[in-house]
Image 1: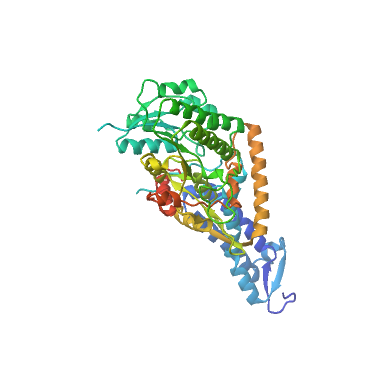
Image 2: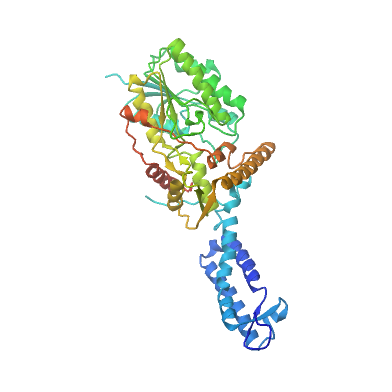
Length: 133
Length: 360
């Protein structure tokens, strides 16, 4: 980690935990509501939030805004190579957070995730006929 | 040539319906009996997606004679026999197959009920009495597959009631000449089935993520015994037509596959794309399984207090750690051939049937 003003880029200290949480929330909303409207919503959400986080880094490093997230969430300066890998990994962290939520709550309105055997009430929607032999 | 006559108990249940279909197809004259629908509800806590169902439409469709009766009330069984020629075979399928049921109810239906019917079968000279027991009477297999001579060690109340039921019937066979053949099927599945194996498939679909656990040491492998209902009713008819089966018991099941093979197949067949593979040292797995069992037991207690039933009955969770492995050699040696020798073939057909109806 580079703390001085040499060759370094600014990145958000809490970007990864934040994008994991956002990924999880999006996964829940997608599985329970958005998937019924359009299956492409998940791809749209991951793209949308990744682009916002990337824009934040680009704008802060090009001097348009002073620090990522205006410094509210903490900033660190790192070597450009590390910074690039860090920033490029955002969609992966989003997916990682989303996958954990999919596993716990299910991937569709019919699914209830690993919570299913440990709850008394059925929360999943009925299955629809899905096969014609 | 005179048609053979059969009495089928539990006719509105899952297996009973298939038995009647086969008998009618084979040209038998069938008398069907079961509880009336409203009485059925006295014994089962509730009907629904995960509970034994009641199918009277099969009987209506096949136009067989239906006489409602309650096994626990002997007087209601008399119209099944009185004034009729002796049956060539009685297929005693009726049973309270419910892991959630209390022991007193299980004993009343399964033990007293079977005794009532068997006594009338002797009195009215039925030629054959084909009785449905369960593999569950044996309990866990310690060393390799269990055959029919293995001692009983039932692990739960339902299996205990079936073991008691068998004892009563074997006594009637020895002392009063009941022409008894006992079938001990593994967990049954097939069209219209929704209690038991269906729980595994339903659970996988509801959870949506697959988990395959590789145990270490590697020699630790749990087996999955099962039988397709078509093979089971064919085996029952086969026994009814072979008098050398009188006085004997037969395990009825496809070849056992490992639980890992089963899960690999089911995740694929049910379209579960995300599968997590976890290697675990066996004692650690057993420890976590015990915790899971404790949670499921606590849920069972909570459900009983609320007057509902849990999604998973406690004995079903026993498959997590116990070895259930049985041999089907005796029946095969007699010349019986399974259609679904590999359970994956039967499960594929069953899953397709369920998917077509939105059951999975």
